[in-house]
Amino acid sequence: MLDEQERIYIYDLVRQVPPADIPPLQRSVSPMLQHVLDNLILSPSFIMDTKWNIISWNKAASVVFCDFNKIDESQRNMVWIMFNHDDYKKLFIDWEFHARGMLARFRSTTVKYIDNPWFSKFIEDIKKRSKEFSLWWPEHDVQKKNEFYKKLEHPIVGTMIFEFSSFDVSDNSNLNLIVYTPFSGTDTDIKVKELLEK
View 1 (cartoon, rainbow, N blue to C red):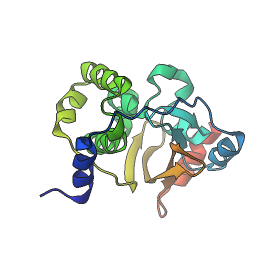
View 2: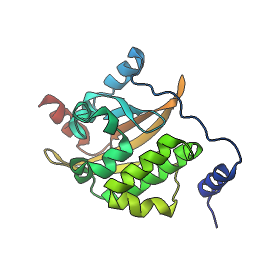
View 3: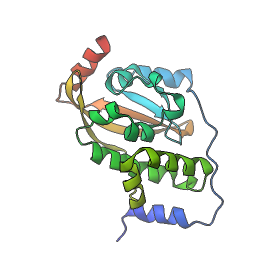
């Protein structure tokens, strides 16, 4: 029996419509949106486009996850990073669980681009680089869950627990705001502050 997300995914797959064009790449965000990111001081946050490319982030994201400036723009893609950057993978206490969840959300949000040449090339490229992606992609899991918890093991400050939230940017539905809020009742906020002060 299919759940609601799987049923919607199947219906999206079988629609007889031309492949959707991926919206033009947006390489930056408005100053106002960057201001919002920068004011989420203790919450690592970033903005992704429809291809899951990270186009903007705050300082907390750089100190908790990685310095996105040091990643070539062509590889600054959340799925690519999750499956191909060893230091990023090591952050997640249950990496397989989070990677599978991300893959299922990626599949759900990109179903309308499944016949787009960019999408096909991206999938083939990442399958060549990641054995896990290559194994899990054919499973066709889908997920639209946009709120959950993530537990990290940071090499400098140790265990951190975040509430993960994902929001569409209201004036541009092609952008998605990702926010990692320190879980209340833990010392995660103190640890983020410590990393920011280094």
